[in-house]
Image: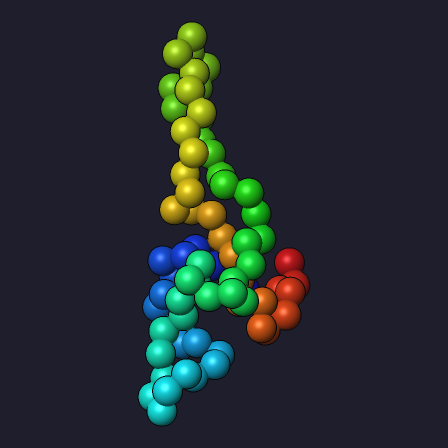
Length: 71
């Protein structure tokens, strides 16, 4: 399952570092893997003012400890 970094922070971590469960650290963890490049959208498409805007908050990744997700 691929998720955004924000969604990952709402999931439980596969490895518990203490006695109680903790949330995923996403990019703060060495096991985090990105599954895509930074997405971008076209603002004002079809006009002379076409501009591509990066949307890094929409980039998706996964926990590398659980293996590569099936697409």
